[in-house]
Image (cartoon, rainbow over all chains, first blue to last red; front, side, top):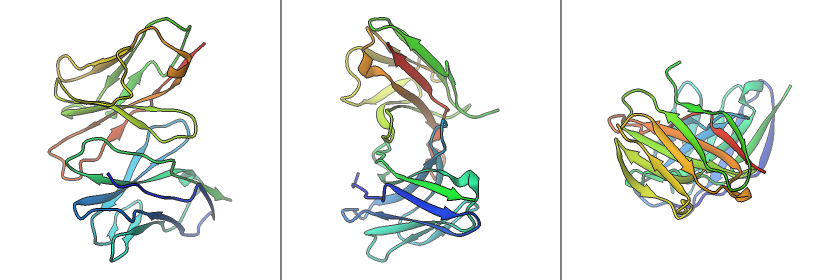
Length: 110
Length: 115
């Protein structure tokens, strides 16, 4: 799986949109971009994934650039419960394991 | 609660002792994964099962580690002759290959401390 680069930490005010960037410049054509998050003392939780089109679900939106070399996870109205480490993962369905980096520690400020 | 469960949640053991962890996946999930997570790092893949067959093992899984999923349901991870470097969170996850998303559902983890 391709390597990803994320900022180590970010802050966001409660109620504002949190935009978490991820670079994956070596992504190949059959690799998906997945986002998971890990709240303190819990296991990781799936958020969203995409291939090349933008995606939206009840938790977040995923914007993937046209060249697929970077993406942004958007939490539209951040709450204190969104404080967590967010992992951007490039994943090939033929490879069962998820390869986590060190992620971005997002802190929502009241 | 129909999520992934792990037991125990915390384990403190002395160096050299054997420990065994249990994971109960979501019912009917045919894939089960084990990961290890140390402080400040993301989870690292250890091994995974498709039903009862262990299909891949990481180089991190030394010969002191053994995992089983005898009936294709729950799984156990045993560490023999524990070392201080084994101290970590051990995470279990499960997934259903019939699920188009192939989302992995993680349990809360077992935190191992080797003294």
